[in-house]
Length: 173
Length: 390
Image 1 (cartoon, rainbow over the protein chains, first blue to last red):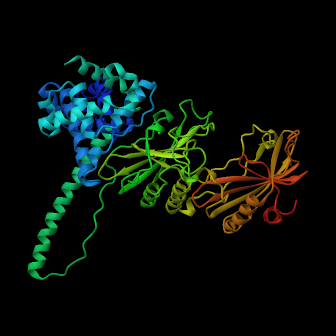
Image 2: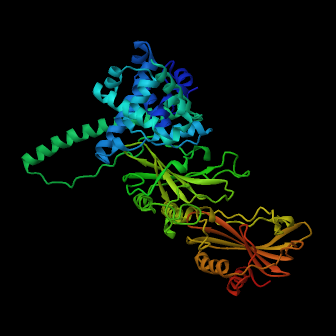
Image 3: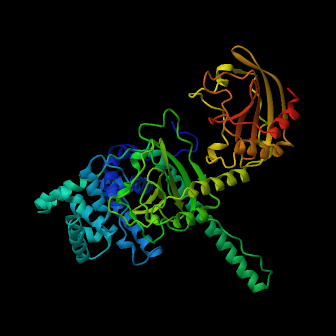
């Protein structure tokens, strides 16, 4: 029953949130490196999807829309900060890392990821977790193909040479 | 996808820690949708008002009408949801933070700071964490305080560059004091996502994002001073109820055993340093006198005063600060008093506290869970003035 002043979600939206939020939140965490920011990013995107739900579901594949919005919103946050606060340094600023981890391996990798720039982090997640092509990644982030390639190369080099990742010597070799 | 690509994917997906879902994510999203609609409606109204205003202004300009002063508009500061960390497992790895940097710890422009008491994952020994305190006045001061924290730890327990010792590469040296909780501050901005600042009393550091700073305990006091001032400004004295004496007290509660629950003291919740014991103007005081029986202490007289309450504050503060610990009512046996008065005070923030004045067979002042201390003559005079001599 609807309580006074409470909005009713559009049909199918609550089921979508219940079913897919966990997966989307993992992507959001890989982008932000912070449980609170990841939840904030996800809720921001879901609120946007709520308003457009009829159109999104008519198009046929809501998760694709929401997933794309996750990255474009993250990039818009990154650009807003880059323009507004510390010009020329934002892309060098490491991602936020804050969630305590259960294992040394996971913690080492989290710290290594925190050394990547925001742009590198987004590119790595899109290319290697979401399996997007260079072209599609560039389109989504609004940068050139060359930028995607160069930043992906630098990001992997950072991860390979990170002293925290001694445990992954096999991968490095 | 190459083998290496697949390995990277496995590594990345394996890096994600367990992420607890909020209790009502759908409800939180609904609140964002509702706020966005309100903002849109507000923007539309503003546009209409501006259009009408510009039209009227143009007409006035053409007709030479009087100019009215421009009115300020205030934007809605609540742009995004914020949440307190659920427990200390959400705190960052302090070792991986970068200490010694000169850049600001947090961005300027915060409009609200929420102080969260974040419990240990195993709980707080049966006590719930205090409710989040939301500060909206004096926020800029707190941001400046955060950004002027020492670059590295300067107090015992962490790195010690203040002693002239370079970082030995061993990372933080933290004391192992058993703590049930630590404080996190969540800063809200008009135009960006909230920023969380994590404090660690054991390591004496503060971390936000990838940056770390030394912890200055004045940070906690600075927040609470402003928080009390905010509550004070928003509380009408007339709305504060004069405390009433309980008609009976179990004698077992009057015994100062080590595992006693202690006296009610809501004033110290927002004044943990207790220097002074009562930092805010008193609005009401009630004195209670009890006759002690075998198992129950019964109220024999009570007197309340509002006009003269503030005059009692320095007396109680002096007695609390100057009193020396006494063994009155202590080991061995933890005997209950044979005569006792109590003072119940309410300050201008609406918080209350209770003080016991053991009169016989020995005198002692008891507050909170502190050890009993010797009583000042001034305090005895105040109580006797209210209740009459014993």
